[in-house]
Amino acid sequence: MEIQRIYKDRLWKALDFVLPPRCVMTGEIVDRQGMIDPKIWRDLHFISDPVCACCGFPFEFEVAEGDETGLLCGNCLVKRPVYASARAALVYDNISRGMILKFKHADQTHVVHAFVPWLRRVGADMLGKADYLVPVPLHRFRLIQRRYNQAALIAQALGRECGIPYLPDLLKRYKSTKSQGYLGYKERQQNVKNVFTIAPRHETVFAGKTIILIDDVYTTGATVKECAKALLKAGAKEVHVLAVARVVRAEFNG
Image (cartoon, rainbow, N blue to C red):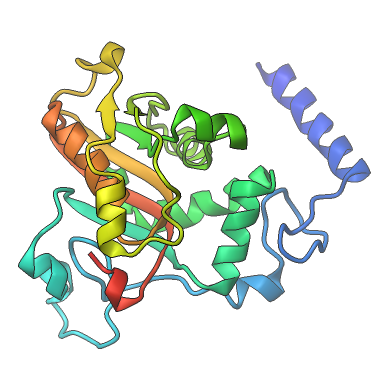
């Protein structure tokens, strides 16, 4: 095993010499695959406390010391989501959007290595009690078009780093739906309603287990809420949500 590791390290060094790793956004040479150019790094907006204890929506105001852990946003006070908690590493803005779109549609899959430490930081509490990581699924037609599920790549990399098993095919999207990109809040809810199910061969695997749903972007939460409903109905103990970025516009919260 040690010989294999040494051989693999030498192979990667040789590849980096021939094809030096570059930032997905600027094209500048960086130290390792997936690293972000410092000029981009300083413009990333990381989400930090105070946030809603349930959905993770960032508050614009300070809260009294000791109140951070139980504070809920207006939407969660009115109707709490079915998932136990949701967190995201970044605000979804022009910078993070460009990075995620390159990852999602332009085969820049190596940027997943940058996402992993951000997700470990923001999701530390939920990852500490997770039994499985489960990506939000694509319909098979969409998967054929894209050739990979970006959420599955994130779940796989994060699971490998944290030592948590991931189930790429636990959830199935059995109905092809319209792209959510240009839909409003209510339209998004209706678009994904009752389109997720559990793969039959996994029906007994996760009963009583804690599941973390992985996605690239949390917009309105409509998709992950439907996924969580399917998992809880099938016997999951609780479901948490972890995303790379989230939209923070008030009309999309909840």
